[in-house]
Image (cartoon, rainbow, N blue to C red):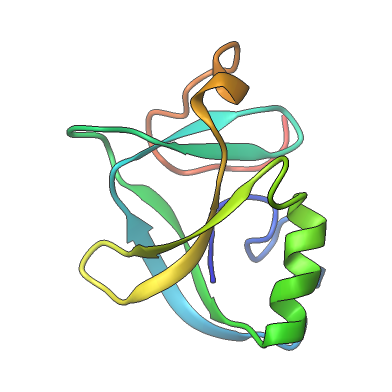
Length: 115
């Protein structure tokens, strides 16, 4: 599982990953990151975009199901199996462009926490 927002270490919802094995930092291309206030949302973006920075975890099947409920999948976020930048494939929760049309872009690709 690739996480880039409130599930990262030192963020408000990291406890949802209790028991998951931390595999290190990772990056994802072809997405843009937006700040929705209490959490960010990454959406697919064609063409050259900055990298999205996050963390990679090994999660169990039951944990993945709990994370789907937490992330509101598939209604709020959709879970995608994507190839990470210079790395393996991982599950990633992405939103849709219409959901972020009034939200500020996080051009750095690094979400720092709720504003």
